[in-house]
Length: 72
Image (cartoon, rainbow, N blue to C red; front, side, top):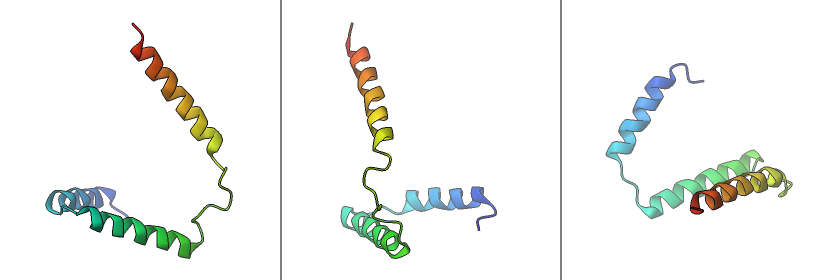
């Protein structure tokens, strides 16, 4: 358990400043995280449609904002 999140945040910020990852390295990290999620049984979701209503609502809101900002 993280008892001091400020120290972790500072470490992450310093690491990001020093370390530049290539596309392949980033892809390897994402694939490793996906594999870990599969091993833990949380990925892929059992029901693909869970949360789709929220995604549709957010898309609708964003689209309406875009349309309003384009009109003069």
